[in-house]
Length: 60
Image (tube, rainbow, N blue to C red):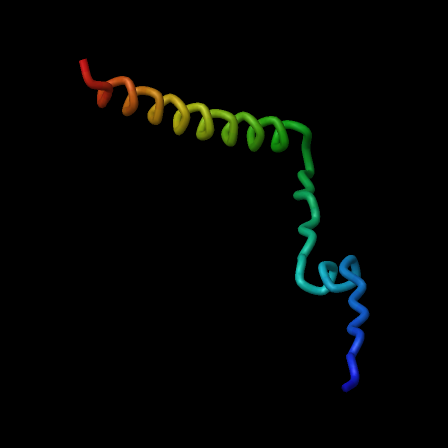
């Protein structure tokens, strides 16, 4: 009976399947400010909607 030893380098294996995205580059700082403000607003609106939905659905 023979046993086969598999030697996996997990870091190397993960690097093959994970794609690292480059951070977006903006020509002006104002573009970066607008993009981060918009993403913050969208996240805040989503969280507020969830909180209101839970508050309305709570049994009285």
